[in-house]
Image (cartoon, rainbow, N blue to C red; front, side, top):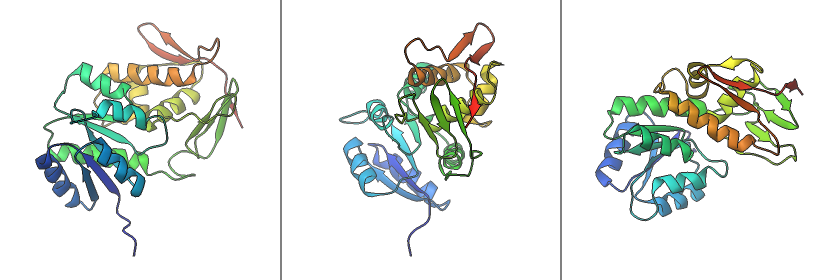
Length: 236
C-alpha cells in the first residue's frame, strides 16, 4: 500500500540538525527525507512527491536563497527557510527569495511543528477545497482560485506562492478599499504568523512585480494606511 503520510524534505548541511528535526517530525506521523545540500535536494524533488521543504540558508555549494529563487520560478512545494541568521534583513531576504515562511535557528520542536502544520494546511489544498471555486478577471488577468492559478492578459501562467495567492485573494475580494498591513498579514500568512510589517511589504512587492505590465499600477500604496487594489474585478 502507498505511504499516504505527508512528506517533508529537510535540507541542511548539519547532520545533527537533520537528524533532530527528522526524529521530531517522524514522531508526529510525518514521512521525512533529508539532503545535505541543494543538488541532493533537487534529485529528491525529481524522484519523490514532497509536501514541504525545510531549507537551510548557509550550505556548501549553492546557498538556500538562490535555490529558493530558482524553485519560485515554477510550481513547487511550500518552502520554510531555516537559518541562524535570524534578523529582520535576513528574514526579508528569505521572503524576497520566495520562501513562504522563515524560522530562526535554533528553534524549539514545538515552534517548528506549529509552522510545519500551518504550511501543510495551506499547501494541501486540492481543486475545490480551501478556496471557493471561482474565477475572477481584472484588466485582462484571470485568477482561478479553485485551480490555484493566475494567468496574465496573454494567457501565460504566472506562478504565485501560497502567501501571494492568499494576498491576491484578499485584494480581489475587497477592490478599491484600503487594507491595512495587519489585514493583509492575516490573509497572506495566517493568524499564527510573526506579525512584522515588513513581511507584508515584501509580499506586496513580490506580488506587484508579478502583476506588472505596461502602464499598470494594480496595487497602490496609501501612505500611513496600507494598500489598495485599484482595478475593478468581475466574476467569470
